[in-house]
Image (cartoon, rainbow, N blue to C red; front, side, top):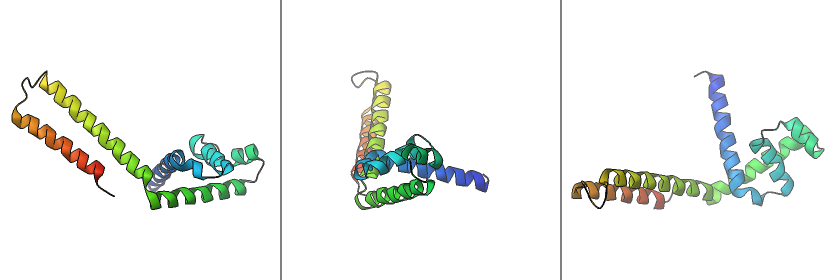
Length: 136
């Protein structure tokens, strides 16, 4: 991958992270900050377009975005609710996959499912539950 592509991928990842944090913690921002950031991250408007919408300078928009970013990132670093929520959602999706696979392979009330298979599935489920409940 080229350096430009790498930078583009990094910016996209950062934008997605901030959009997620904005959805999660947006209410802690002022209404104007939240609106500016939503237009930038969720609506993909340019600084000029946002400045025109709010009747402020591009620099004012940039400052509001940078301040909002700092607030969201600091809050996530301190409390970590967004990461924790994502971890739980990912774990639940994995549990659903395991349950569907076990149901499909089982074909009914234990039909074709050996005790070893059943124990293996339970071990998978317990492993997923442990990852959900671990701190970090």
